[in-house]
Image (cartoon, rainbow, N blue to C red; front, side):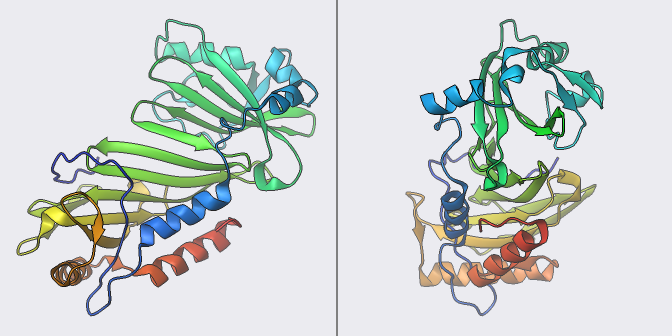
Length: 314
């Protein structure tokens, strides 16, 4: 796995991003604008929308038999993003299972020692007026499983599945957009955006890793190789790096970068010294062949990505 040298600094917020490439001005808060833009269009947390009317609608929906256990859902492997509680280890492709059977099967991987607490919610992936079923199964104090199920022709199909833990959580919005939050250290956090479209297809949009405070080097691991970018002569303790990627699979990722500076209270600041540090850091990244973007560049790259995969909420 990729490892970066870091100082164990408690991060209380997903901090702001600015960028200064070689000879460029520090940009506006790129991370904040992108993340806020995505959140603005993804809507409320589906769990938070668990109103009485939503729950009552399940009984009147095509998914009533799934909730009651009288209907099974097919596992195709498509949209399966489970990592620890891997459905592929306990389920067979093209076979169908009740929700309880899926939860019980996962006991082969982890002994939950208690009955799953399952919530069923109606959502509308792609906002096309056709309903899908969100299943949230709390399997233990540490682990849970989210699934989106869609009726296709005369059968129910799992079109998305993901396990959650104390270090990796997500919220699935009413329109099928997904926001995932991961923490690998006190000062290293990931946010990932994906969605299930109106056809029930799961697509990964983008992710961004934020690293607060650097030591002597910023280390980038890809496969068996490591690139160490020196921070010598910079106020590295007050520099943050944001590392963007479009590939969900860790081993396939190609990264592009942006930076910002912050003060002792972890608030984003712009100083002449900070601008100079970021400009120099940008040169060092570019010398190693990495792409560095300002706000306009980030916006353009994300828009191209959205157009490519049919993400219409950006």
